[in-house]
Image (tube, each protein chain N blue to C red):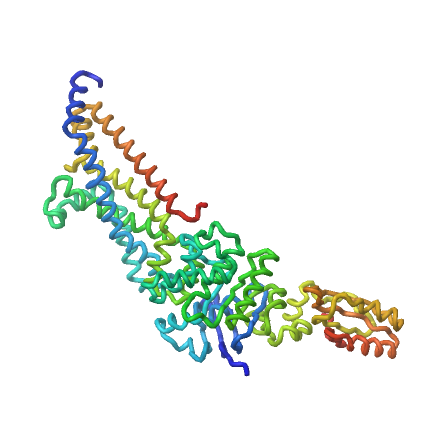
Length: 342
Length: 230
């Protein structure tokens, strides 16, 4: 049975007052389960960073409740809040390492804060183990300036896990946004490893679809300070129900300027084998020709993700046969659409 | 300028007073007041940043305003005037209001507001993200000051320490007018009051050399301490 580790209820955050008032977050409700990787995706300005800062209360919500691990953070006083923050940790887009400390000293930092002051040998041993885990055993004495972006983020991840006892929640604020695609991939793999092997619940804030695609179990789409939809990644990405969801899943926009007269069907690829020539097969075997109206798919590994909109043949029986065929393909959902054009 | 009398006087001074004067210039008139000014200015400068509305431990606005006004006020008084006004106070702090020892008090009072501002700008340069990271780990404001702000600003602080040192060095030389010792006093007493220009110029050259030494030492130390330089 899954257990809720982070519960956000009716969370509001407003910046400024009067005319300059900005409603950054409105009525956010989220439940993040222990041990999952939860994604919060949105375009810039959607309120993602504010939302993640409301989880560890770096940003104090204007209203609402945040409960982590059964402890209502919003009710805590500053001193108790600092203690509570030790069970959560955070990594950032800009890595935020201490520039005047070596990698090893950076990782020791949270341990120095929590009063394990006298045990330098123990701290360094723990830091070295963590460096090994993130794949940088030989960088203990390197200063951040001597490390690449990916290496800095690895050190930051090691630092985020250093606290003793080990944090149960890792908040990632655009942790891969400053990295190139290959490095992003390796950092995502590392986050996944941490999640699987150490059981750390990971909350990922990102504007990148593929980050969510690759590591998240569930996702919430944030737009204009409001959660537009949330659910399993495969459901949301194969079939976004809201305008904001579609904008994210199909950045090019599924806009069709000339409305075809035929009925339309939207294929959502959710892990179908990319090697299958679906449409060609339909044409070759059954003699049914479909018109590709728009397509936005991508291949991850050997699987396809994304959507495609097809125009069905005018002939009703052919259209029905095509639909049956499409619905039988594993990893693909086919759905007739009417609300596509805007 | 190079008359026999002048050269003789110069060699007399070099033999009898120069070593003492150089040492006085370096220690009681420069390094000591600089350290005292940092002792007061460092916490004040930190407070100016942390007590800010958006700082890590905001203080009531009136408190910050008073702090700012006092610092600006002290900074706007010309050093010579401050020297005259403050010198009587030296009797209270160091037991005398004449001589090199007495000058330390006005030097410190003139320098600490300046140092506070230098510290303020150094501390403000610390990356907000790093402060946020420390907060996310549950660091208290005091821990952030001691373990993040000051260590991360160390290169800037060191660099500004030498800026302050050289400014105070200049003030110390000026204090010769009111009975302070050191090279400045010799330059003023012989060169200015008695029109022995040779002595004055030699002292000025020595002052210039000392400033160069301070500055290049400062540059080396700053560079060596900064881990952001590969």
